[in-house]
Image (cartoon, rainbow, N blue to C red; front, side, top):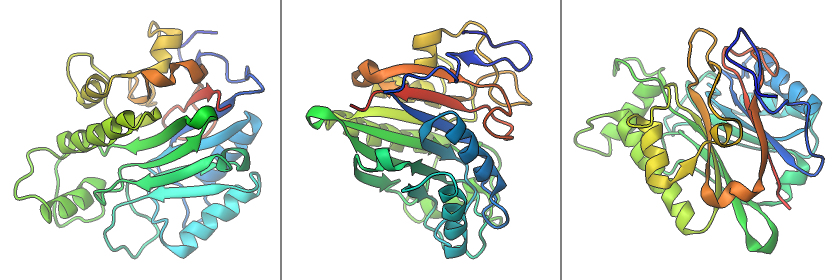
Length: 294
């Protein structure tokens, strides 16, 4: 099934078609997990992921201060109603914070069968909360690294408004650098360095990018990332880009992506982009990818 580009049709391999021996990963741009109230956004994603046999959730723009005990406990309480034996790891900026709502952030939620393969995890080393990564053990000492990435929308920055993701990053970066030409450009430079370090360590990489921008082959931050790190797009490789759908409900283009390293090609089985509202009520479509971990 390859449809898309017409109202709200799915694109790629049908999400109901899953090889029983594969591990399903769902990437979701959440627009916040509502951890201060009923965690409804997370509730939707977890229920849908149970229905569609996902074992890993990679979440971007969680907008949650997960180091707040009430927020973290509420997230775990919501998840364990449906997923037992979970691992939850999150990223956010290292600025002091007092409310549960905190713009930006990512999370990885893994079921027990995947958690048992966990070797190590690591947060954005610059304290900017842009990504978290999880390393899973495969056969013959091979390792696959899962990395959800959130890139804040570019725009005007008011240093007096600490609440935005960009302003949080600016406050931290101003303490480290004398001048900053472009936060988005610096963000992708850091991500390229991080990703290439993993490539040199022979990791198989699956990177989910909440890019907030269309991929353009000759320019753009994701194009630069793919060029420098030699990453591929499984949606393109498996399904082509003819009739590729919009990802943002009020947009006309795809602005969220999954990328993988060439070394990872042999373990990718299927991928697709479900319709809006199929997994969650977010204004972004989700993306899924099925891989072999054996």
